[in-house]
Image 1 (cartoon, rainbow, N blue to C red):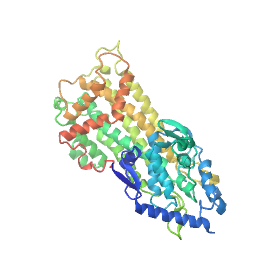
Image 2: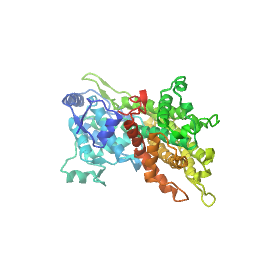
Image 3: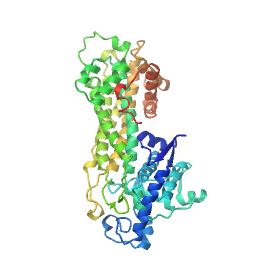
Length: 521
C-alpha cells in the first residue's frame, strides 16, 4: 500500500480522499515527529512560566484576558472540547468526518501548533480502525475555526461523544473499552489546537471539488448527446473561435465537444440543412460550461493551498515568538465556495434548458420524445422535476459569505459562514446530479430516434452504458426509477469513466493541453 507522510508530503484533494477511504496509509515521518515535539515542548515551557499566551494559560474568545493557573491548564483544554460541542442538525456524512481527520492531521503535522505526538497517533488510529467520530453538521460560523464540528470530532480523544464503529453509532467510552484503549489527557493548548481550524469547510470543499469535476465532465458528455438528439451543429466549437476569447474553461469544453462529436454520422447527416444557429443551451456550451470550469479551477487553487496550511491559533514559531493571528478565518474558502455553488447551479440551469429543448419536437423528434402521446405523457414530467431542482438551486446559490453575525461578545465580530457555503455547494451538487439525470434519460431517448446512424465512438459507448440500465420508453412507466438509475450512473462516475476508457482505447485526448490543469491529482 502506498504511504503518505503527514506534514512532509504535499496533500492534494485526490490524496486526501484516498487517505480518508483507506486506500493509502498515512504516517508520521521522523522529521515531522521532531518538529512536532519541539513545538510541544515550547508550549509546555510556556505553561510552566509566567509568560501569558492566548489559549495556553488564558481563557478563550472574549475570555482571552482571563488568566488560567498552571494547575488548571490541562482542565482548560478538556473543557474547551466539552463546551464547544454544541453542534446540531443531521450528522455529516462519514466521508466528511474522515476528511476532517485527514486534513487536521496535515495541518497539525507542520509543527506550529504545540500538539503532542500521542494525539496525532490517536487520530491516525481512529482512521485506521474505522472508529469515526459522529459530527453534527450545523453550528460553525466559519471563523475562530470550525469550532463546534471540530469539538465533536475530537471528543472521542478524551473518551466522550459518539463514534461510528462497524456501521453502528455507539458511545465512545464503550468502543474504547472494547478495543482496550484509554482516553487521552490533553496537555496545554492541545484542545485549542484541535478545534481552531478550517477543516470542516475544507473537507466539504474537497468533496465538492471531486463531485463537481465529475458533473463538469458529465455535462459535456450529456450535452453532446443532446446536441446529437436535436441534430445540432458542431461549428460553434471551432478551435479558432475560442482562441479569440481564450478562457481556459471555454477552450477546454470546446476541445472536449469536438472530440466527443468527431466522426459522428449524426452531425454529418445535416451538414447542409440550412439551419443557421442552434439555441444557446446547445451553441454556448463552451462559454457556460467553461465559466463553471473556471470557477471550479479557482476553488481548486485555493483548496490546494488550504490543504497544506496551518490554520489554528496561536501559532508557535519558536521559543521566543508566538503569534495570535487569524489563520482560522474561513473567508478565503467561503467566497470561492459560494462562487463554485453558483457555477454548479448554472450547470443545472443549462441542463434543464436542454431537457426542455429535447421535448419540443424539433428536427424530426416526436414531441415529448414519445410517438404515442395523449394516452402517454412521455417525458413531460421528468422535466418538471428538473425545473423544480434548478429553481431550488437558485435559492441555495445565495452567497453565505455575504453574511456575518458577531459572536463571543464582539471579540469575533466578523465571521465567514464558510461552513454553510461548503454544505450548500454539496446540496446544489446533489440537485445537479438529478437534473443531469433528467437530461441523460431524455438525451438517450432522443439518441434512439437517430439510429441507425452512429455518433462518435465515445458517445455511442456512453449511450450503450445508459441502455444497459435504462430501456427505451415506448409508453409511460415509473420514470422516477429511470431517474434514480441515471443519477447513479452520473454520481458513481460510470458515465465519465466509460467515456475516458473509450477515449484511451481510441487514443483520444479528451482534455488536450488542459489535462493537468483541470485534474485533481
